[in-house]
Image (cartoon, rainbow over all chains, first blue to last red; front, top):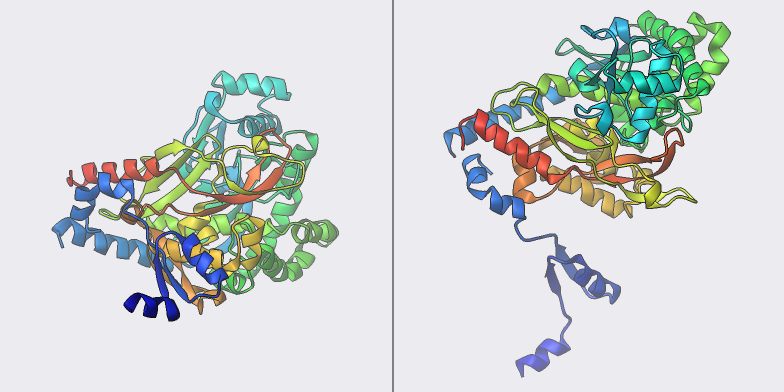
Length: 56
Length: 418
């Protein structure tokens, strides 16, 4: 079964967002690439259309 | 890209070019009254944005009182507080007079100031001489010991260093700071390397112009790893000033705090300050102190971050990362990388060995701060809220977001973008 194959092969992870999940995997020597990402900040939502006009 | 966006991009590139094109040279040490043009009589310059006596924090009030006695505007500290509270002196930010000062930043006509000349643009900037650690005016110290030291700096040390500098035509700072960055300084909370370098530059000339006082003067410099901070601050102000006043530029040209408010100014919005409450730094406290002992963020020293040093260059300084409680070197590299996301570009002449000689991220763009939600990172000392008790720790602090929100709204009003 595909699930068995997945569980029996090395897990390689791309972690997006919270760093702690990547750190847990690193501590277990599991390969992981962390992507430092967070949702758009409140300021960018509040000033979104103005920031768009100003070029960012 | 909209028309206004194109104008902003061009203006920000010009602001960045001016910061990178600066040629700051430490040229003199003078009395503030002789160095600072148009300083009005009975004026006390202070750190941060404008503030009244009533809203000043304890260390700043205490330093003001000491300064009034030092200047002879009051006979004792009690009278000084009465004079200050009754409008007997004028309060203005250092930044209104091309100056900066660490912590309380108190500057009055009779104190000595370092003079840095930006020879690429012809402007000058000023900063008081670092007094050392402990009971000093920048932490709110105001007793006889503090005033005697200020008198020695103004009457003996300053004139000797000024003569040494004039004798050799000044000390160029751009290359010296580049060396300091490769030796582990970030020029805000670590200045050990550059203090050593400037001592080496000055020692021979000092020996020749002031042999009688040489021992005390050399000990005064070498005994204080932060001696260079004030030179770095005057340098940074001299670098930032030409980038101010460029229409359409959304680059921050001033960041400063007075212990009550944090304030910023933008290149294209004139002299307006955008302020929010000064924050408490997060970091490591010396043994025996708690967070309750700390004063909110204070001082003009984040002019270093304004030109790409300090927190922006944290990756250059493995030693400072632990000192300010910011974690490991990898975290420092993370801080510097995050500053790349809110700045116009790197400074290829100020590079960091830990980042494959990448240039320090320079010229904070208020648009990028608001679009990413990433606030500038400032390395800072934490001062005791009890005046004159000195530093109680070190940490990192961010400006309040509202400064940047106000600045963007003002920018949009001024440039018809609302």
